[in-house]
Length: 307
Image (cartoon, rainbow, N blue to C red; front, top):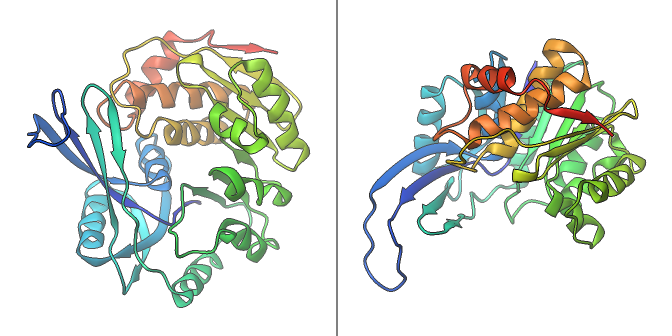
């Protein structure tokens, strides 16, 4: 079974405002609301690709109930913990001449809530996949991802981590199956600017030396790089298409990589499906469907090159 963990899910309120101007009343020309959070996005795309999974996380308040309803509408199997204080955050995504985001804080988790999460994680079995993705609420310890893997260290799990800075670095000693920074996040870890694929490979290898098995680095329009656990390095250009919505593209890449690996058992197929799934989401108003991904795969048979 695949489990995704989103510690700070959100209602993503996406509004389009032609020529947004500060200090005046602006009116939307279009608006949508979706269940959000990196792990939730991974769950939705995995479901679209035909892979059953369970979403774990925390909900609170009336926004949490609205979130739960939207998740059920999307057909996601979920096992959420309801928190007594605060509310599930609302993240506003403003589309205008520029894309702007305003992200909420999230609920007020207590130690008892975290212990309930550990109780659910104790039900994972050897061979399961756990995807831990996204930011954490300010009230949670900054070591929470590391603490979870310490708690689960006796289980033979394949762990995927999509997080930034210390949240990611702290888990590397547990040898996660896959990590997915983008090139900017990779540079932040080492205090450098990473623009070229050669630099991605250099610093990606350092993350492997620190414990990561597979390092998948997204580079937006410049493609992606995979440093695989078997020592192979692949690079990919970005599929051609018009970017409609960048939200969730990185999460879709994670879901696509897992789907490709589970379907075919090779890192090359996993990487190609990851790249095409991420792009399919970027080229669509919503997250990628299997049909959109397969169409991109068909048009991009020669996407990868060995380094």
